[in-house]
Length: 49
Image (cartoon, rainbow, N blue to C red):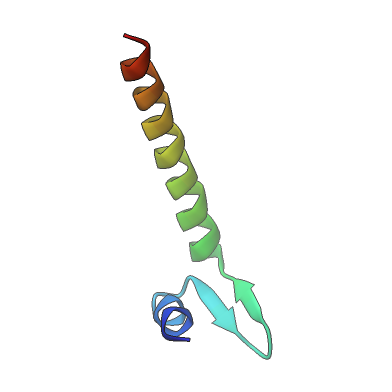
């Protein structure tokens, strides 16, 4: 429950009887995914050398 409250404070989710992802939460997820993809690509390049 602690993490849900933290995400709600940061406006990543909204609790209105159910939990929904806000636009800010969707942007965060997209940005995180891009960063994660970049890290994976760099790691792959390093291990190929």
